[in-house]
Length: 71
Image 1 (spheres, rainbow, N blue to C red):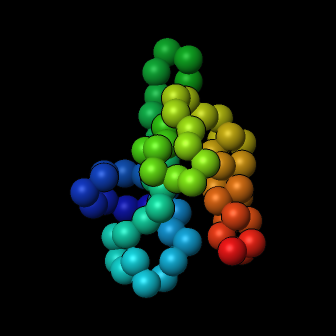
Image 2 (cartoon, one colour):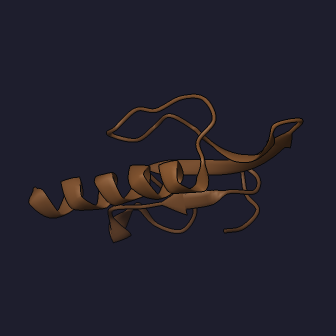
Image 3 (tube, rainbow, N blue to C red):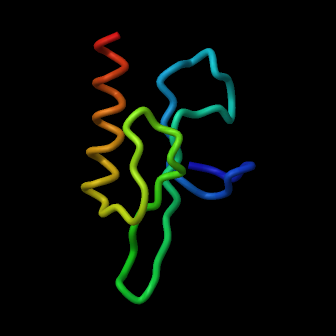
């Protein structure tokens, strides 16, 4: 997690060669009247949009990780 072009978020990178600041997906942490949620940037293999629960974010990243291992 850190600051960069995309701001605050939790980034996932399936490839070390992407380099510092590179990632395959980024989950932004947001809050509204409904509570705190994660919003994917939408760059991942498993495209997802809208608000995600913490469990939904974990499932998204776990799926991306497993997909990468299968290749």
